[in-house]
Length: 117
Image (cartoon, rainbow, N blue to C red; front, side, top):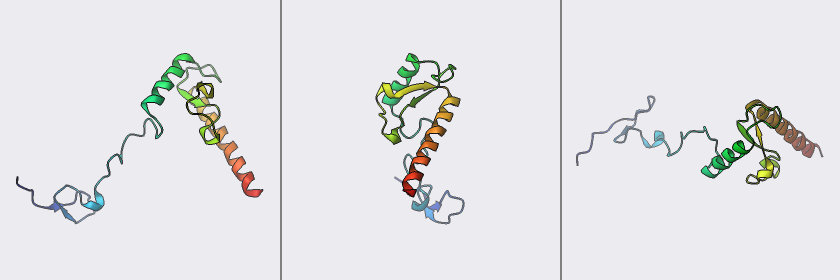
């Protein structure tokens, strides 16, 4: 089978010759640009559990609006269980943002007190 003659790497700044479109230094890694739409921890199992939670509790637990997020009441970073439905609550996007910011502030205070102790 004929082989194409080498051509310049597809990266605009590179002068390397290659027969594969990009040289070794600029070759894209598999999955490097995969969609982050579902987040790094999302799996089919979690998406199905999330759907069940939102079907079971369709309204935001804080304000009563339509829930779009499933929140871990005790954050995973603080030892909360990812898979225990008792640790889940349905929240709207705004309430989830507020709750996440509260969790972050609490973690920052806890970590700060450990440093000064």
